[in-house]
Length: 108
Image 1 (tube, rainbow, N blue to C red):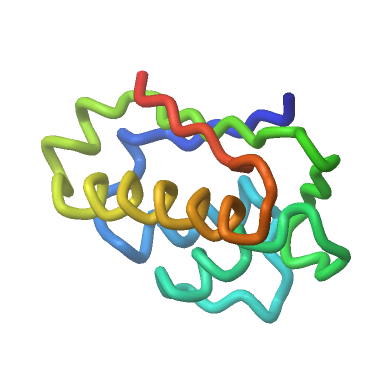
Image 2 (image 1 turned 180 degrees about the vertical axis):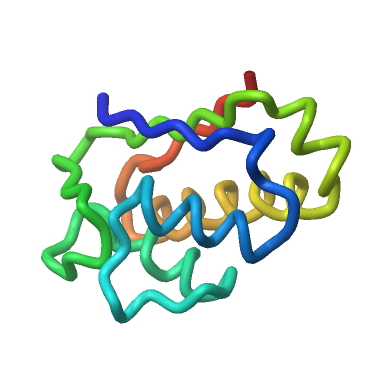
């Protein structure tokens, strides 16, 4: 299973979330610092789009760990809720195409 870690203590706003995501996911230059682009990039993890540094196999899952999630929840609770919601929506996209969900979000 592929894994990446985001430090929730370092995420204080949407800009710092997108900066941390760009580094952790290895987003291509075509991925903007918006939630729509974040969703789109993570919707193609099993394709040849090269939007991230990850290329998942058909049944492989990318585990996203948000460490220090309590600090993030205290600083930006709405953003943490939005990320959780978006991961669920991305997994629904995969299921709509007959694939297994590709993301697993862990808050630590």
